[in-house]
Image (cartoon, rainbow over the protein chains, first blue to last red):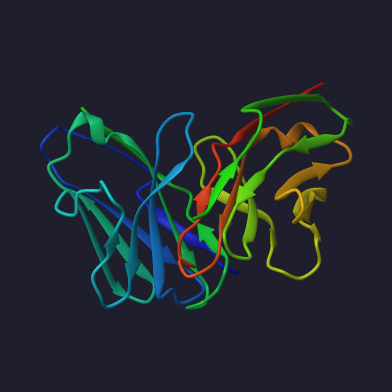
Length: 116
Length: 114
């Protein structure tokens, strides 16, 4: 149980284009999902908390207009990187909580984004 | 405020040797503590967690960790390393009013020598 998937696993795009990454909870409903960014050889940095049916909460320093988050259903959250630039190249990982107040986050396999 | 410090960005052990990965936390409220493992180009897999029950927590793949409040530590151990244990390990803390947030340590890369 508690499986989280991400799609795509890897994406290469041209500078200036937008890229959408999907995060799905496969066997549970997730009222809260989280988006992280991980640079090479570094730890995870929380970008935003995605709540179903409401606006995402962004961490300080994360551009809301750059990283659009939509949590339209209890099993799907999407992260759209708008007008991507090479510096947006990174490993993006989502996670989800099984219960509204569950203490554990279950992580997806991650999406490698390369912007040329 | 909460934070996590992982001592040693790289740890190398021989196969069959004891694995000890260190994690110290800072929290103004009773914490929840987690250890996750990450294999290359993959997401994080939960190894074990402490949520204010037993202080010695057993996880998957033979790992265990002990919560020591007096030392603000939550070190991860495994009696005998296996080659498949080579990966990066992250300690995380959450809790208190900001229950959503996980604060991750910087990670420890474990190398297992044959």
